[in-house]
Amino acid sequence: MLEQAKQLLKRVYGYDAFRKGQEEIILGLLESRDTLAILPTGGGKSICYQIPAMLLEGTTLVVSPLISLMKDQVDALDRLGIPAAFLNSSLGAAQYREVMRKAAAGDYKLLYIAPERLDAPMFTLLMDQMRIPLIAIDEAHCVSQWGHDFRPSYRQLAGWIGRLQDRPMVAGFTATATPEVARDISGMLALRSPNVFVTGFARSNLALSVVTGVDKKRFLRDFLAERPDQSGIVYAATRKEVDQVCAELQRQGVAAVKYHGGLSDDERIEAQERFRFDEVRVIVATNAFGMGIDKPNVRFVIHWQMPGDIESYYQEAGRAGRDGEESECVLLFGPQDIQVQRFLIEQGTMDPDRKAIQLSKLYTMMNYGRTERCLQQFIVEYFGEADVAPCGKCSSCLDDTKAVDVTSETQKALSCVGRMKGRFGITLVAKVLKGSREKRIIESGLDRLTTHGLYRDWNEKDIVEWLYWLVAEGYLRVSDGAYPTVSLTELALPVLEGKEAVFQKRKPLKKRFHAAAD
Ligand code: ADP
Ligand code: ZN
Image 1 (tube, rainbow, N blue to C red):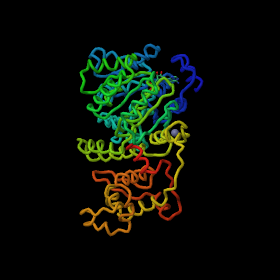
Image 2: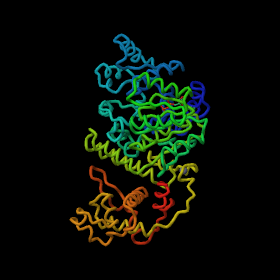
Image 3: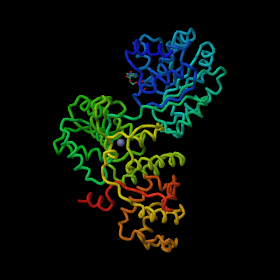
Image 4: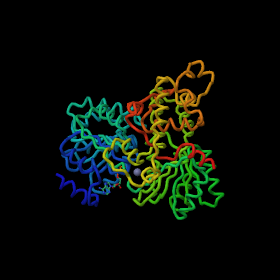
């Protein structure tokens, strides 16, 4: 079977070898195993169900939410000589009937369908006449409330699969699924002891960095000056900031354009095209930019602020280096950026559950900004992929600052958090450590804690930053919800008991912040 699959890969697609994961996924499907495949965008998911579809008897159903994508795929299959069609609202009545007739006759190897069409009585009749070995579900994360793109029609899909009398093998495909989402998808789609594959998330040509405490404008100017012939994207959070950063670059004589939702369609298309055809070096954009672009030689992606979650960050940063050449992804991390993001979530219209989920994702994003671990590992593990070696080229891997022993400071902070019994937020813990005599503190009796004032000679901002570092390293945990409180994790106890030491690689906080202010 594997040989046949390889021959098809060569003969139909012209590729010599499977990518990481593809072979295992295809083999599993050929052995009739339910499957959940989590591969990054561009990782080659379509081949994973198209090749089995060609080898299995009957017609593979592909459920996809995006009409334009269906058409692209069917056109591509046409060109490859594989009989395929789609059923969705873009077809006229006559075309629809024609596809139904041919499908019933078994003329197609693949039939694409939108999830909301499945329940139609016509379609149920059709299914009785068809032989369906496999239902492939694209963008499977849409079934999960935890995912970032929940669609009610996917919920129906789950019910529909459950009601099938003669259930074919089911395979879900997605580019974004944290372990929670993966579990959720598997449950919602009622996958039967599925093969789960998470693979291909590491991008070895990307050098990830987090840069903290710099003058962003100066950083950007120097960065561009050092790479005069490279082009890339600068992502900023708001339209206003996009305008400002772009204007600043233009003042410095950098060929830059801007892109955001406040521009007309024409302006946006023009900006995108000028960037794509290398008429300008830099495009400054909000996250509105990216869906349609497919520029291979983007050498850098700089984030002016952190996005709200790792999924968004990696998707945007991952637009660098599509051609496989060495590229850089820089996050300009300002601890205060979290305030903006948190505000956006809290003021948003999401229901409370979603807000809590989004907040916890935001904290993970913030941990990325502070971690001393390999950044590539951090991201890849976030997506649930294990056993990936340190990348050797991220700002953590390259940081040769000597780690200093910060056990005693850590004990003081952890002990204070312990005494506050998980009832207060980070700001208040910082105030207690600072020794503040604010009304709130006196009223709660917090001034009587033995840890009150232990960090008297630090400034409060540094204390907050230090506490967040302890969160990023896993000694403290911040709760979800509208009033996040901080508490100890399992890692805290051995430190408090003096059984484990804590080392911090970065320059001592005060120096770091003073250097930044220079
Ligand atoms: P996804 O759906 O995961 O985003 P696609 O299925 O569209 O990705 O594949 C992305 C690109 O990679 C396509 O151009 C596809 O032809 C190509 N590709 C897929 N598998 C291989 C392979 N084994 N070798 C080389 N190119 C591949
Ligand atoms: Zn690394």
